[in-house]
Every structure is written in structure tokens, then in C-alpha cells.
Image (cartoon, rainbow, N blue to C red):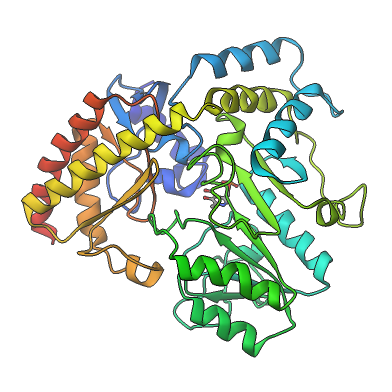
Length: 425
Ligand SMILES: Cc1ncc(COP(=O)(O)O)c(C=O)c1O
């Protein structure tokens, strides 16, 4: 099947032709590419074209595609049964590694990041006996009803949902504050000192493009909710095991942390964890219900163990970060040369090119980016064999499998693509 025939068939099968919205390429124009296979830093589409890939499955593939140790672990696990609905040794293997690496006393494996954050919220509400959740504008925590709220510009307003189908009564329990704004956080708790169950935050915002937290924001996050009896939930679905082996360490005061992506080695996974006292509120040791037919699935656990073992010595992180630095430096130089109002933001092996003269501090600033210019840039990069995430507001992921030649080829392509954006700037 060709790209075209797969796209046509998918359009008749799936809403919008995809099984997750960003894959439709709608925000960059152009057609989605059907990926037939991946190998290291490359993907190959159904027509046989090769791409240097920076989507990397939106985060899990820090070692690149089809890493031999992960493939072997999945194959081996599959030969001994794919699911049992019972406790398995693989859960203990991965659980032990996660607990040791993160300092969390107890962990629960689930099937997605969405389940992890949804469960963390339920747990926080049960632990505090309160209903209100605070999140930050532009942070994405999966698609549970109460978290699909970012509520526009008002500071400290109770939310309106971004999605149809979310009852006002649920959206209204979520307050939305600007990211990187410690004053807004203080003001929220001054006005509502005893209603808030939890503050949930991406330790590094990576769903408005990459927007690192300021030290003042991190400090306030760890101090203010606690002072008012609310829990802090660190969403490390992207950052966990991406910045370093374990949690990012940006929010060591968090009561609960959510994981996903990397810890499943590219298979469907999520996890939440924290102190035993809070985690033991989960069923069956406590009254907060949560369950999953395929939670702790043996294939996923095997892939996760192989992934964490490959990451444990820190070498893959060092390599991916050095490559990302080379890429960010090269892109910044290309932007300067082209005299285009754009900026490169990098942290570890993650980066975003914003079509905005300076790096944004929050979602309101990120939204000032020229998305038409990003679309033109994306289409040109794709034509040149570089697969970027298809949105201005996604993060690029560099893996340890990229080579320096791949990075340099990406920078060379970017010089051409940047020149091509002049018409839309
Ligand atoms: C920070 C963050 N939290 C939660 C999620 C939801 O994870 P999943 O897509 O596995 O449900 C995502 C997904 O991209 C994410 O980036």
C-alpha cells in the first residue's frame, strides 16, 4: 500500500483519518505520512522515503526506533504469554527500577499517561477531601474530562473546557493559572485557601512547545500548595527518564509524580507514584478505585526493563543531550544568518523552534508564534526528509541513535526551510 492509499483508507475508517489528532498534520498543512517502519533515528514511509525523525513517538523513543535490546525483550516476553490478569515477575522488575530511580515509595502501573494523571487527581481529591484542581494554561495532562481545560486568558478563573462533551460541572472544578507565574499561584491560594485538592503541573512544559520553568515558579510550586494543605502532582510523563535517569528533579517536593512514555520502551504505559501513605489509598489497600485489564502487561514491563537497563549508566542521556545541543546551536546560527524572528529553546534532548523573536515564558507568549511560518518550515523540512512534530506547539525529541551527520543534515535542511518562510513572515 502507498502513502496515498493508506491515507484514503484511513479517511474512511477513522475520524479525521487518524487515531490521535496531531497525526493529521492539520496545523501544518500538507498530508500525514504513513510510517511503515523505523530503524534508529530514521522512519520510512509507505512509499519507501526515509526521514530523520524527531517525533520519536512523541517522547518514548530516547534510544531510537527498534532498539535491538528492546525488540529482543518484547519478542522473548511474547513467547511466554502476552497477558495473564495476574501478578507477574516483570511488574516487580520494572517496579523496582522505577522506585529505586525516583525515590517514590509505591508505584502503580497503568496503560497511558492519561490514566496516570486522572488517577493522581482522584487520589489527591480523596487524600484531601477537596474537589478543586489547579492546572496551568498550555500544560497537557492527557484527555481526562477535568484536565481538558485551559480556559483562555483570565488569571485564576475557574475553567471552561477546551473540548465539547465535558460537562460544565466538571470543567468548573479546574482552575487555570498562567505557567511560570508564582504571583498568580500565590493569589489563587490567598483567595481560595482551603478548596484546592491539588496543583498539577508539567515539570517542564512540553505541550506548548518547550517552555522550561523559572526557578521562582518551581520554588512557589513546592511551597504554596503545601502551605494550604493541597498536594503537588508533578506530571513527568514526558520528562521522567528523559532529562536524566529517574524524575527530572525539578520538583523534589511533589507529593505524586506521573510517568509514561519512556518507561514503557515504546509500548503503551503510564504510572503514578509517591509516598506509601498517599498511594495506599488506592484500591485494594484503600478506598480510591482504579484498575486495568492490561495494566502491568508483560510485554510492556519487559520493554520498560530493557529501556531502563539501557539508560542506567547515563551514557545515552549524555549522547542525546550533546546531539540536541549541536542541533540547537546549529539552528540558532541558521536563524541568525537568515535574520528571521525565531528562537530555539532546548533542555536536555528536547527542543522547540518558536517562530517568535524571543523564547516564550508561558502559553500566551507561545501562542504569539507565527504558526503559518512554522507550517511552511515544517513542509519544507518534510520534503527534505526531516520529520518534525507537526505543530508549533510540540517538542522535538533527539535520541541517542541520531548521528552527528543526521544533526548536520537537519541543520542544512533548516537553512533552506528558514529561507522559505520569508514569504509568510
Ligand atoms: C505531559 C503529559 N502528560 C500526560 C500525557 C498523556 O499521556 P498519554 O498520551 O499516554 O495518555 C501526555 C501525552 O503526550 C503528556 O505529554
